[in-house]
Image 1 (cartoon, rainbow, N blue to C red):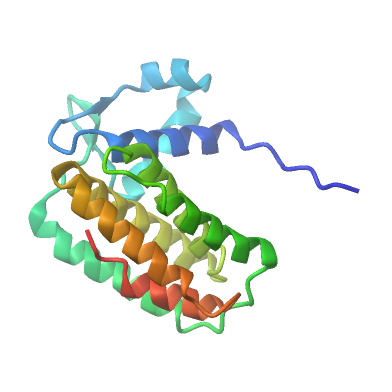
Image 2: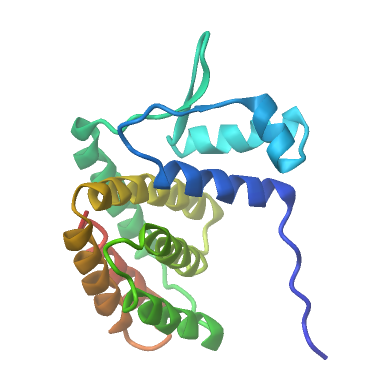
Length: 207
């Protein structure tokens, strides 16, 4: 009997779509997210849209400004070292756990990511983001503590913004770094979650 995949909720779809939009946007342009436009775009009422925006604010991707509304947070170069230290600290905390053995499907996902990375070209901004999204899903699935997993996810998306900003400035170098990072990740001990996370930490700061 085949398993059916549970459809994603409107909340999840809107959250993923807005994360993608924010990360792919020009980091030098200020973007305002209007609640009324978002409710119409995603077919949701204001309350769930506000919950999506609150999650994005927790991830420090957006902020609320009086008299303006919800705007995408500008990247402050002085904050980059702090963001890297936070991300490294969270991955180190993950490694304090004896993580479960990865399933065959999860193991296969790592190799699928490697295959995608080999195809990335310097003009493939969206594919680069998709690879980051898949990496997030693989690593997050290994974290047994819900609070730590939640904090890791927030930190991860902040790092993706830095990496996408680096891609905008130097797509050739960023694409090369991505391929090296995925190749390093792909060398992990099969189905060993701790080794996978350790390797992800070693190459998490290439941007």
